[in-house]
Image (cartoon, rainbow, N blue to C red; front, side, top):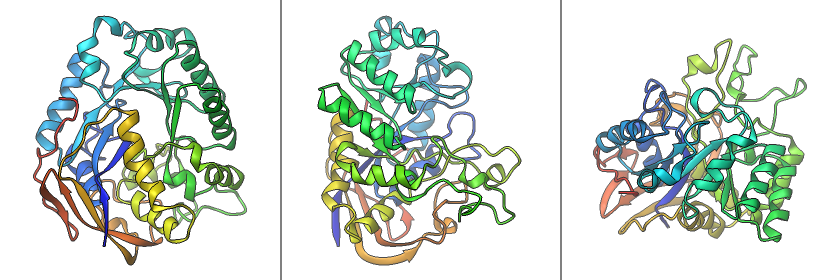
Length: 361
């Protein structure tokens, strides 16, 4: 039996408020515990998005009643809320600031770089800014980190060019960190010659829709080759229902809370990375980057020799599917202890709703 610290996922979408048919703080934190994760950082692109006192309270009130593991909630950067120096207490209550520098919708859309400036300038430098920024906009985000001499964390990198630019920036002392998701390490873009194994059986490819998109084998190989540049493994858990994914206009996003650890432990078994890499990138580094407190008497017990098939039907996420359906993995979460209480054991969630704590309180 393997004993790991309680793992941290710095990038999850719990869909509350506004889309609780996909997931909510109850089902999402249950999925986290089943995956060996005891602390999640929730993203702000909900309905309504989380960007001020009222909307933050809305999300945190739901979390207080429902969460079964510990959590913190991100604020979103919008075109009109960059005056953070006037709202310092609000920033201390959040996981950090999330900036959508590529495609997003509604109140969190930042159409040009003049809208980025107040956020980089005014958000407290001791609190993290996380950027959804791909390719060239990622390079621009790193430039902003250099200009304003502040840390920036790049979400879900997926491309060879991204990891190489981050490597060069780190070598020059720019304060940049980054994360990668399992789907960008284990899946590649479907091509007409090689349709994805996770597409619909009728040939539709809605289930491969994700942002950033799945990349080429060359990109995937480059991520593996540069694992030392990558600070965190994160899921970007983004659940949508089967009906939505199989529709004419499928929304992007994959669930991931219950599959990240078995996928990575299988890679450890195949000598593609070490157990120490997993602990570093799912505990030590996220704890440091996001200034997270200790979770006393918290650990995860894993049967590292258990082999099984991933099945959506056995998962706690509400969305009802996984891109890794049928994958054979090695390493099963048997027990999770959170703050001295058994929170998960042998496939059962034992932590009651509301047991999870807001780590920013």
